Length: 64
Image (cartoon, rainbow, N blue to C red):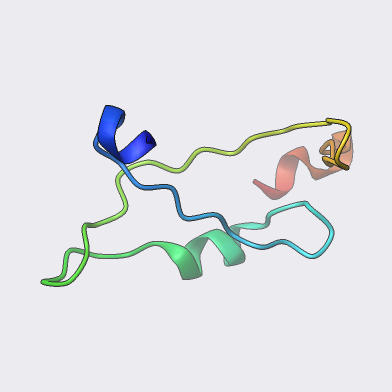
């Protein structure tokens, strides 16, 4: 539905401990190519929900 309403596609990135680092993000950025659209937006969700979301601890703020 997001692609239909917003014209974008989400590509989640797996993080073992739920905390992303720049290296994980850098590896997922796509350049313009004939078979996919380039990465145009990076959004980081900091969630803590009933299914086990992870909250970024204060010392990790400098990692991103």
